[in-house]
Length: 323
Image (cartoon, rainbow, N blue to C red; front, side, top):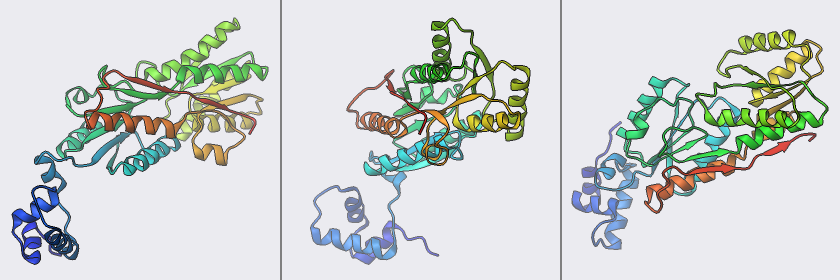
C-alpha cells in the first residue's frame, strides 16, 4: 500500500508543496478555497502530517508520554484511563509505556519519547535512579514518586491515609495491628509516609508497630506463602493494614484458609475494588482528581504559564468501610 507524501497532496490539490505546508502549519495568508482543496486532497489520500516534522518547525506535537509500571493493575489502569481521557479533552494524544519496574527499560522508554519529540511526560514508576529525568529539559510531572527535587509531584495524602486506616482498625477493637507495606521505604518516600501515619497513630495509643515488607511484584504463590508465614508466626495479630488492595484481598483469602479472624483494610480504592469487593475496607485515593492535577500542572508547564519546579500537590483520601 502506497504511503502518500506532501508532494502527492500538492499534486492532487493543484497547488505547490509550500502551500500545502502552510495550510498544515497554519502559516501565511491562504484563501478558504485553497484550504478546502488541500484538506480535500489530504482526506482523499488519507494523508496525515508528520508530527515530528512539525515539532522541528517549532510546533507542538500534542503528544504526552505516560510511563507507569504496568497497566495490568487496577490502580495504574484507572489512573492511566483518566490521564488519557483528560489529556484528550485538551487535544493531546498519549504514548503509554509499561516499565515493569525495569530501570533499563524505563530509561529506554524515556529516550524513545524524547526522540519522538513529545511535549511532556507524566511518570508514575517506582525507579528513582533514572538520571535522564533530571537532564531531559522537558515538562515532567510525577505521580507518587520523587524523581528529582525540581520535578513536581502529585500524590494522595499518604500520611493521612495510613493514620485513618490504623484508626479504623483500632476503633474495630484491634490492638495487635500489623502493617504490610508493598515497597521499601527508601524507594518510595510516599509509601514511607503511609507507613509513618500507621506508626504515629499507634504511638498515640501506646501500641507497638509491627511492619512486614511484601513486594507487590512477587508472584501470587510467593506472596501467599509469605503471608501464611507471617500469620502463623504471629498468633496475636488481630488486624492488618495492607498497603494495596490486591494484597489485602489475598491476605483475606489466607486468613480464611487459616481460620483466622483478622480485620483487614487495604489501600487505593479503585473503581474495580469498590464495585466488585464492596465488603473490603480501603483507603480510597482520589484517582481522577490526582490525574486532573497532574495534567493541569503539565499543560501549564508546556505552555510556559507556570514554573512548577518543586511543587508538591497532595489530594485528600477517604476511608471506605461498611459499604
